[in-house]
Image 1 (tube, rainbow, N blue to C red):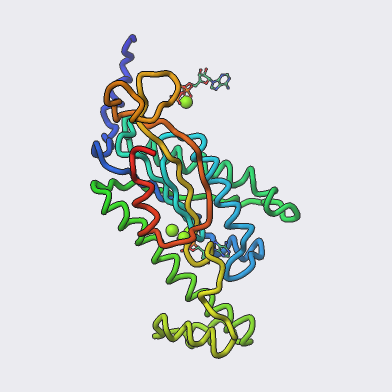
Image 2 (image 1 turned 120 degrees about the vertical axis):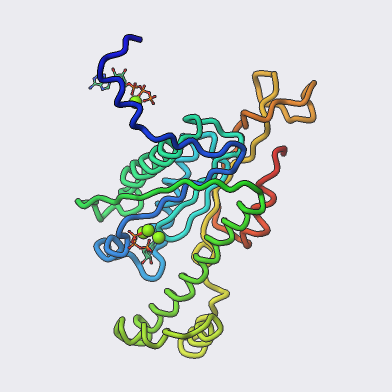
Amino acid sequence: MANSRYEYVRSFEQPDVLLANTWIVVRIDGRGFSKLTTKYKFAKPNDKRALDLMNAAAEAVMKELPDLVLAYGNSDEFSFVFHKDCVLFERRASKLTTTIVSTFTSYYTFLWQTYFPVLPLTPPLPSFDGRAVCYPSDQNLRDYMSWRQVDCHINNLYNTSFWALVQQGGMDHRAAERELSGTISSDKNEILFSRFGINYNNEPEIFKKGSILYRDFFPVSTQSSPTPPQAAQSPPPLSHPQPRKLTARPMSQPIERTVPDLLRDSP
Ligand code: ATP
Ligand code: ATP
Ligand code: MG
Ligand code: MG
Ligand code: MG
Ligand code: MG
C-alpha cells in the first residue's frame, strides 16, 4: 500500500482494545425516551408493544452478531454480552459499541410499524447511546446482570405505584411523587394492595424482571459441522464459539439463578 503524505493522521487515533479474556458487555439506552413515550402515548407504566419491539430489535442484533451469547433488557435499555473469547474487530470498544448501537437502532425503526402500525415514526427519530465494559470473572458478569435486574425491579415497583396513584387514585404527577417520596418497597406494595387491590407479585414477569435472550454455544471442533465437545477427537480450541439455537423469553426467574446456567461452555 502506497503511503500518502496524509497517512500520519492515523497516529492521532487512540487505541481502545478491550482487555483479553474478559466478558464484554455493551449496554445501550434509549435517548430521551421519557419524551418519546409521551409523544407516542405509550401505555404507562409498561407498554407491552414497546417491550416486544425492544426484544425484537435485540433478537435481530444477536442474529447479526454471532459472537453475542446473552442479552438482557428492560425499559429502554439492553445489555449485550460478547463471549470472553470474542475477537471481533480485535475487541475494539468503539467498533463493538457503534456496531451494536447502529444495528439495534436500524431494527428498532425498521420494526416499529409492526408493533405500532397506526403510529408512524416522525423526526426526531429514536436513537440510542452505548458503552462497553469488561467483566473479568463469571461472578462479575452475574453481578452485573443482577444489578440491571434489581434496577428494573426498583423502577417498575416505583412506576407501578406512581401510575396507580395517578390513573386510579386521580392524583396529579406532583402529588403522586410526594406520596411516594421516602417510601420503601414494603410501603409501595402496601399502597398498591390496600388502595388499589393490586398484588405486585401478580404483575407480568416481563414487567417485573425484564427479558433475556441467549444462545447456547460450544467450541468449534475440527469437523465442519458443529459437534458436541465430548464427541470430538481432541480438545477443541476455545477461541471460536459456535452459535446454536437462539432463545428469547421474558425472565421467569431471578437473573442470579438463570445466568449461571447460561455461562457453561458445553451443552
Ligand atoms: P436518557 O436519554 O438520559 O436515557 P430517558 O428519558 O430515556 O433519558 P431513562 O432513564 O432511560 O431516561 O428512562 C426511560 C424512560 O422511558 C422511563 O421513563 C421509562 O418509564 C420509559 N419507558 C421505557 N420503556 C417503556 C415502556 N415499554 N412503556 C412505558 N414507558 C417506558
Ligand atoms: P468493513 O465492515 O470493514 O467496513 P466494507 O465492506 O464496508 O467492510 P469498506 O472499506 O468500508 O469495506 O468499503 C466500502 C465498500 O462499499 C467499498 O467496496 C465501496 O466501493 C463500496 N461503496 C460504498 N459506497 C458506495 C457507493 N455509493 N457506490 C458504490 N459502491 C460503494
Ligand atoms: Mg441514559
Ligand atoms: Mg433512556
Ligand atoms: Mg433507560
Ligand atoms: Mg465499511
